[in-house]
Length: 469
Image: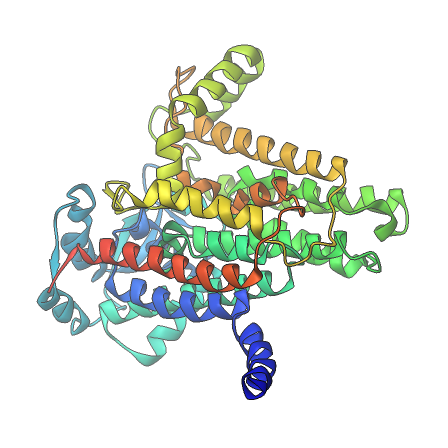
């Protein structure tokens, strides 16, 4: 018994150190994520072809898009990309379709032939600022140094994007003072990892949002911390990239006010920090829009859609729009939840149906019992602020979609996808943070990564259905 006690005395601290959420995330996220990069058929993530084209353009240091005769954005890209379109783009509307391993091998042997160019249009992604494509662009630039393969370049760009996501999210989980397992669970959700293993800007955006959340939370809950202007600059930089990628998340700037005024040294410095973190991203976004106008682009995301008229209608009919907003979330709550947890392909390849209720139960279990720092307490005004951020984010996500995709005064907001809520998922966990519930911490350390890995494996099995071995 004494030997067993001594062994336990030495082993338990080692296990506790090994089973840290950030380390487990890195192992699972990178290992499974690389498998997603390889075994998710190209272009079988929403709009991946357009994101790939934009990323390739940025990798060649072309930060402003080209424009065709119809004022639609695009660029001169390798003609070989037509082979990718012919092989994979039709599959996006045929969820039962597959691509053979033999065809993938043939494309791996096909040269990129970067000097043979043609103009490709990618209307929506051409409007995005290049900052959101930094990881993919770095990956594509590096890939051209090591391979001349068409599909090899595509896969390597995916992998570098995944590694950026994994590194940033690892850092976020490591530094957040509370709810590390909550962030772990949402970071390894089937939809999150599928986005990170593609050319979508969502993977990079999700990781930056988690990091922004963790940096502010760490200062807010540390009584000895003081906010420096350098720290404010880091927040502003993160919010600038987030806003340039998707301006609907500008409401996250309010999280700066979560920090007690004493940490800033004065209320004035606190409010000034908030305005800097809010206004710098907003200014950057409007400067980007001006650059696109100077370039001669039609900023309408689709024919017949005039965002300015939709904004005018919302402002002149606020109560009617509020009704549309509430009814949209009420009527489409279930599809939003499904899309949040995992909906593959071009939103036409669901996971096994039993995953969705199980993941909801699992996530609430982790939210309620993740109490690694029971000494942390949220004040009532802090919890209220988090709820306000959540509500404003929900409203801004829906409104941004309504303005750019729906006809004038349309009775329902169409085009919202569940994955848009991933960046604010950790705020939901914080809103429900109640450090009064207790559970054996080993249940969290063992069950949480095991169950998360199971969900990821089921997601990978779903992605594999599109490849014929």
